[in-house]
Structure formats: structure tokens, C-alpha cells
Image (cartoon, rainbow, N blue to C red):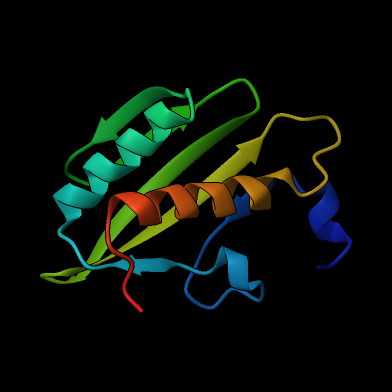
Length: 116
């Protein structure tokens, strides 16, 4: 991991990210199921859900150490991608955003089936 990631506060996942942990994950479900699963994971993390947009399929949630926006996109009827944008509130973040994204993806994989 590059040194700049230790001091960065904002992390975003995408399809072709240089870090494996920050690549988009795809699931075998519909968009609505993914939205529900993301909200369940947010509640499990003791986060307050700030907004839910059912037209753009976005969920925003936060706790005392980070704010996260989840964007759900569908590539086909039974394949859904989930991306996260995380802003950490720590003064010295030390890559906390990456750790949060890995944890959220891990919890999400227990709720809905990840596509391999």
C-alpha cells in the first residue's frame, strides 16, 4: 500500500482500482435486495442512516468516525454492483477508510451472495 493512503481521508471503490480491496464487488441479487442488505449492515455497525434514495439507489450512513455513501448499480437482472465512498473523521486516518470498506464488504457478503 502506498504511503499516501495512510494520510488520505476519502476513499472510493471502483471497477479498476489499483488496490484489490477498493474494487467494486458484485452480488447475485436485485438492486432492492442489495439496498436492504446495505441498510442492515449500516444498522449492524451502529450507524445512523442519513438518507435513502430509491431512484438513484443510494444509501448514506454515518457514525462518529466516518460517513459512507453506498451506490448500488445493476448490470443485469441478477447481478448488482455495490460501491462505497467513505470519508473518515480521524485527524490521523492511517488508512482507516480502507479498513472500513473491507469490513462493510465482508458483512455485506454474509447478507447477500457475492458473485465470483
